[in-house]
Structures are given as C-alpha cells and as structure tokens.
Length: 350
Image 1 (tube, helix red, strand yellow):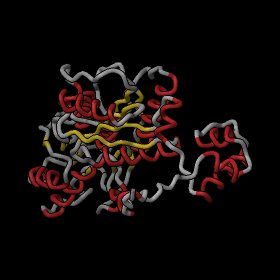
Image 2 (cartoon, helix red, strand yellow):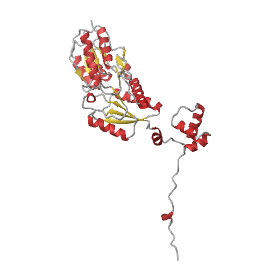
Image 3 (cartoon, rainbow, N blue to C red):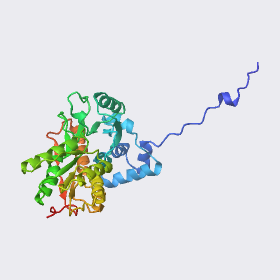
C-alpha cells in the first residue's frame, strides 16, 4: 500500500516565534541571581547601586524589557495614572498637565489621558469606567468648569482621586493655586498706586478660576471703599480682551484694568494702543498667570505668577500617597501666588 506523500504546504510548521529575553537570561548576563533581577525590574530599593547598574546594563545589552502587565498582577499596581481633563484646552490646563507628566515619570508611572467634552455626570462616569478598564491606580481630575461643583455630579468610588482647580466639596484631596489671593494682590497693587478704582475683564462664567478671581477683585474694592465698576466678560482669548479693551479705551475715566489672564491682557494692550491710550501713562494693566511671553509684551506686563508646576507636583504626590497608603489627604492644598511688577503699571495721570 502506498501512503500518499503530503505536500510541504500542508505539513511544514510555520516559522517559530522568537522568544524575547527572560529574567533568567538577564541573570546569566549580569552574573546575579534571578531574585536580584526581579528586585531591579520591580524598582525595589534593597539592591546596592553597583549591582543595580550591572543588571540594568545587562538588560540593555540583551534587549530585555520588564513585563508591566505581569508585574501588576504580582504586586497589585499598574503604575499608571488616569487624568480626566476638559477637552477645551486652556493655558493653565496645558501647563498643569505638563507638570503632572513631569512628576509621574520619575516615579515610574505612565499617564492615560481622558478628555471630556462637558463635565456632566454621564461624561465623568464614562471617563471613570473607561479608566477602570485601562487598569489605572488612581485618577487626577483637571476640569475647571462649574458643572463639577454641582451637587448632581457624583464621582464614582473605588479609585484614589485628586481634584485640581475646583471648589467641589468632595471627600477627595483638592490642589490649586490661591486664585482669590492672586486677584486681591493684583487689585491692591493698582489701588496702592493711587487709582480710584480698578476695572476687570473676567474669564468665562463657567470657569471656577474666573469666578474666584472676579469675587476677590470685587471684595478687595469693597474693603478699600472703592466703587465697583461693571464687569466685562471674556473667554480667556486675546480677541476677547481686545474687544473689551476697545470699550474700556473709549471711557476716559478708566485708568486701571485687571485682566483675569495674560492672554486677555495682551488683547487689551493692543486695544489701548490703537485707541491712543498709553500704557501705563494713561491706563495701567495687570494680568494673571505670568506666561513666558508676558515679560515680552509691550510694555512688559505686570501680572500674577501662579505655579502650575507646583500644582502638578502636589497633585501627583497626594495621589501617590493615597495609592500607597490607602489614606486620603486632609485639607485642600492652596499654593501661594506672587505679584510680578513690570512696566505696565504706574500711578494714574495727574
């Protein structure tokens, strides 16, 4: 009986899948135990520095990469942080996000970004659910709109959470720059120069930061016994500052303006210049943020410096503490602001 010969295509095995280097391979290359390699791969501190460097060098030579998924199963941490952020970009949010990223990298964590269009209950809950599926150890919320402060927004439990830039009364750590103190410093500076009152270009009404700055501006004027002018409302953009500036420039009684951010102050400066109102000889201007470009406006802008870097660092520190210990931080963290005096402010015209 003749057995039919099988063709190569039906019997030949496919190409063998190449196995990546293992911990055992690293141990042989470095001349250490597998337990030592495991300690280095998991970031443990009970390995002397020379041995750690030898193991890391061996990993690089043979191309070994620690399996983060397997490590998470072993120690119960994914080394990943979720950030729920407003989809509408702002200068402050962008800078704070950069600071968060800079703070988590040295700790061996990665970031999963989850933008939300509107901070409603549905969107926030959906973002939490998605992050849970992505296996994060904790969440930082970076949404400044008022909806997050309303009672109908309930944050799901089960994950460590830190909230940035919100007045929400939640059982979570809240970290922010002291918005009210910064606005008071700006307004008091202008009053101290001899201006009878200070006009204000506010940020959008749905912004927590804008509201805090506006209320503090008003309270500072009232404490000083100064009149409170009508508020002009912008949207953080230079264009909105320019449009408000055209209205202010047409009023000769306006001698001092506090803009709620540097970008609106930039538009205001242009409007005053085009209208023939010299800064600061005719009108003094103060901004808020101290963005890098503000020192190069013409004239260089007096402004309130807030530290987005410090906010990011403190938020990450609070979250990692909660992840490691299971205990939440206590009182909200309010970081101080600083008045930076440049050439855009002076006493009022005689």
